[in-house]
Figure 1 (cartoon, rainbow, N blue to C red):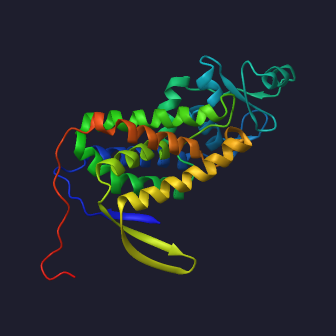
Figure 2: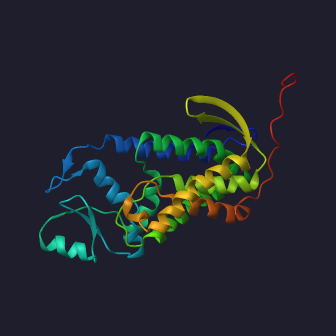
Figure 3: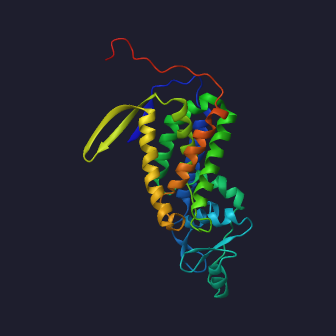
Length: 273
């Protein structure tokens, strides 16, 4: 299910939503300029991967401020203070990295993505749902809401495996906060949705509470599996707990941020069915 638009007009043009989308696209454009050739003395790390390690949010660094990370000759990330770091350092097999400060990576990680599908999906959800959430609170509050949602998401994922050394990147957690806010503000808004069922493709209009409720379940089930298997942080892949953390933060705090009255839903034109 892909959302295309809702039926709620905004009183003002969503400037900040557009700016956030533009910043994400600029970050991804920068990522695309990075080489996929191997760099470093051990020749195991690409320039693109190096940027992810340096600017992604690594759980171990967030729970151990001041501890830097490097890359071993087998391409695994090892962090200062871990047993693996001591062993690899003793063998002289570390690739030095110019890590950003740990607190900076909390923010830079929100604007980096792993693929075109990753960023397109996130930006589509941000555009469809972000404009009305921004309209409900104004621009400065929306920026704070978005960033705090992203921070909550990063730390929610960190709780799963505090000592994990796999970087987390993506705007998904911050966007999930927007979804959590939207579902509480506008549960009965109608969302025009592109639906895929095997080879059948159609457009349907569903209430926001249905669509976002389904989205939430699709994040919850695999997150439970990650927690049960206790491998979420080290296995890489999708950070489902980050999605849930951002969504629940948005759900819990939206009333603190949303202060503006907004217009009603669009009405169909005369003669429309």
